Length: 127
Image 1 (cartoon, helix red, strand yellow):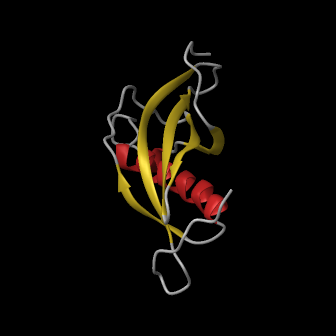
Image 2: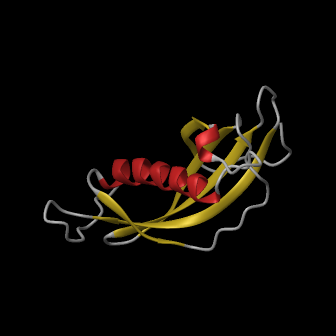
């Protein structure tokens, strides 16, 4: 286990497969980011009690690589809720293949906007 602990709630776990990697077996950063976006969508939709979209992703850099066979573990934490949007801190961790080693891969702030049925921004309900 790593010394650092994840922030937020466990929101998504998935396995990194060969189709998600380059020829050297390193997982594409875009795949990791897409999984983070999925996790954000789950958490934000639960909080907004409806449809949400990703409006922005703040700076993201990769501290560690993901490899084929690693389990990608995503944690989300709602940092701020505005009138129609919310900011979620999202952390991606790698549980290394067939080990107990867990390392932080990357993190980013995702800005999610709540939408009504017509696709227009709507207020996020009170918690």
